[in-house]
Image (tube, rainbow, N blue to C red):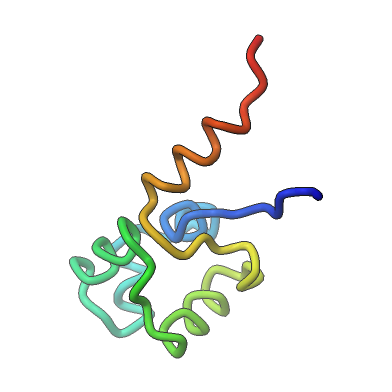
Length: 82
């Protein structure tokens, strides 16, 4: 079974070329709220998530929903030792 690709909301935003403040303004939320969601996306509403998917141009299936440190730990576990 192959693991699917997952990106944090922060990575999606940066890859789309937006600063935190720019993205928050386009999404109609404060930059503090967006920052909170980038650290833990487990409580993002579906409507806001759909707006992010549209703004960042990334498939919903590729977005990791949860604490970004859980994603980092998961990625570190899959790295092949050199």
